[in-house]
Length: 176
Image 1 (cartoon, helix red, strand yellow):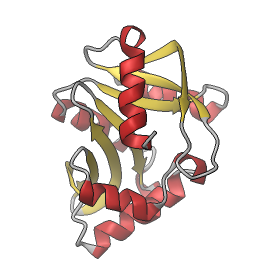
Image 2: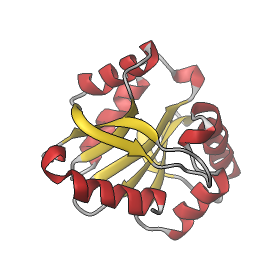
Image 3: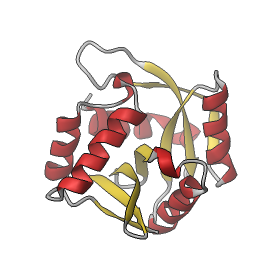
Image 4: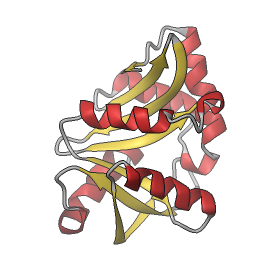
């Protein structure tokens, strides 16, 4: 499996990411597609990586390099590859490639699916910071904050540094 930067000039890759992004995330949990691609072209901190195995597009991952940590923003596996161990393979590869701690947001554990997602990340080594109150700012004008939890892997103490971490995520990923 290969994790590589999206080739924005490739219609196949661009369309794959666009469709999977829209299909995988509700409107309240994603920015407008054009804005995401513009960020990728214009902001060196933001990366869209595609996952390829045997020349097939498997999924994508977006993330921000925020100096002292990586903020993993969106991660999706194409439906035909789900439940085949690809999520773990991708995250293992991503963790191995990053030389900094990684932080991500997860939905509150209020549904079976959100509990399974948290369990997935815990099985690969992420820590759930249960005591930290965190809100995902809206991606669209007039949207509402969404209560979330933070998870991390690597040498980082979210409780001790939550103000700086939250500020870095909010100002870079959400522009607030």
